[in-house]
Image (cartoon, rainbow, N blue to C red; front, side, top):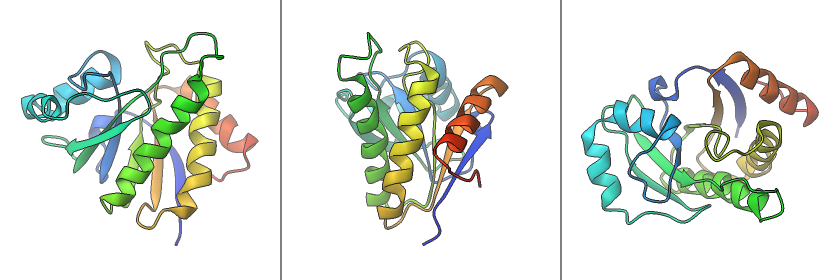
Length: 175
């Protein structure tokens, strides 16, 4: 199987992929940043769907339809709030990527796109978070049966540069 990883700069709510991965809060009912943008773009049906999921714990992943989004599904994962880097944050962030990938594979999704989980209001340092994200996906993607393409979505040039450096550091080609 030909697995690809790439970086794309833009609005995750506009991507036509099988699923986008939302950096959600524990209620899964919308919030600020990417989470709020996804909820607004998907429409009020998303809130009704997430209410039925009963929330999620940090590192967990749950799935809903994409509703008004071009993406068929939204995988909601709760990233860790960054404290000091010594409170299990790295393992919890790794769980977000691992559990989201496994859920996408279970649903037989081929193309998925990740937002930069925990790097907004949750305060995770972007350089460290990008290394966890990219290395986790690079390690797990070849083991996936269905997932073929993973896009890391960044919203500005400075974020894109950090992800590009992470790809270079980990010797990964940006498809």
